[in-house]
Length: 237
Image 1 (spheres, rainbow, N blue to C red):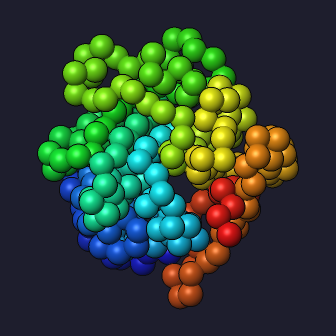
Image 2 (image 1 turned 30 degrees about the horizontal axis):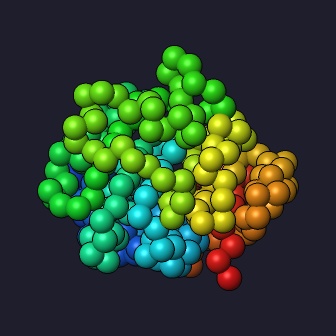
């Protein structure tokens, strides 16, 4: 945990911050320093760092479902730049505050081979007002963004990260076109019963998932999150 008196000395609003270490090193993201020091030092969700480092060289598309402040979105972009890769990154976030912060971070990105698309909506099992499915992705891109991005998405060689606070099953129900072993999945699971359901659902599509548990770090301990959170990731062993 961050020492409280250190937190009190930091700004309590979003500012551009660098990511100094980990798989997302080199990224610069609009973050609130008081709750983002683990991200700055590259140890946020440190349990996944090795897996992410291994997977990013293998993909050219990232779907960030539940982008929040953009740590994953812009962290992946920084990793692709280090690798000298062209890539598409599509971020989905329903909260207006986060979308505004994501847009600021997009505008501050280098003009290079990384293409961004932001979607202010939920992702679920059907297309309706305020919600889309991953299967409907290419048809749902707003017209005003089409001149800035390549809309020819393919359903392989993609990393699909899902963090939707308990709506994991609904997202997967609307993502059948993406369920193939050529893609890589990172799913934060918020209900223990979903671990087996998701594992079996993916296995039916030839995709083996591996469970990753939270691991407190020496001295600074665990993150401020529920102990009843786990990750399922594509098994790359």
